[in-house]
Image (cartoon, rainbow, N blue to C red):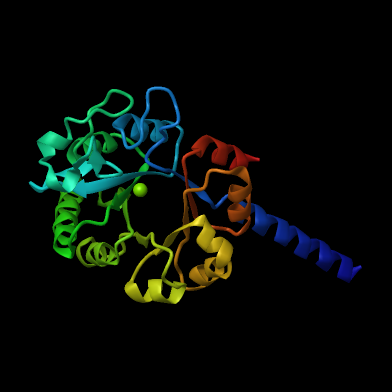
Amino acid sequence: MKLRKLLFASTLLFVIYGALHAQNTQVIAHRGFWKTDGSAQNSIAALVKADSIHCYGSEFDVWLTADNKLVVDHDGVRNGVRLEASTGKEYTANILDNGENLSTLQQYLDKGKQLKTRLILELKSHKTPERETSAVEQIVKLIKDMGLEERTEYISFSRHACGEFIRLAPKGTPVYYLDGNLTPQELKEMGLAGPDYHHSVFKKHPEWIKQCHELGMKVNVWTVNSQEDMEWLIGQNVDFITTDEPVLLQNILRD
Ligand code: MG
């Protein structure tokens, strides 16, 4: 009888633990919630729509133009014109798929400030480390001036940019590294909050998820758009999933 009670209690604990963990995975909209009417990747509308469906965070991409203006865009090239060789004025004349002008970071954050969703700011890799340092200095100052320090997290493929965010942002600001080539131990030693890796990296190294958690780090995964991958990662207890399909992910998490 005692054994049965013990078995029952431990099963119950296991179920509760599993349920709690399953709910822990948070949704980050990749380039905002753009796969919906009136939206476009990295548009202000996509940020507003990510907030309207209560995403934990909304991811967006930031570059520095030739005249040192911070703008929001992914590729950094439009109509054959490179962002790093353009002025802010020239580059923000580009029109996004939903009819919005491409925005400056200031315009983007002005709207973000009115919302609740967390701002997952990706700094793209620039031509030189000096350009990245200059971008990080400006971003950290702007985020501070706007009172958004508590709501902003930084991500980058550039190790240099990640190091600069760690050096210049307030202590404890989450900074995640995007390229899948550092082990959990190496991420920890750099002072990162954790990996934000492509899902194929965790398929190859599923043990890294647990190792990151044991080292006190969190795990983000991009860009996860299939139900099968989402379910696998939720089962692995990842902390964040970055997706172009936030509604699908929310529905899976609700089930
Ligand atoms: Mg990005």
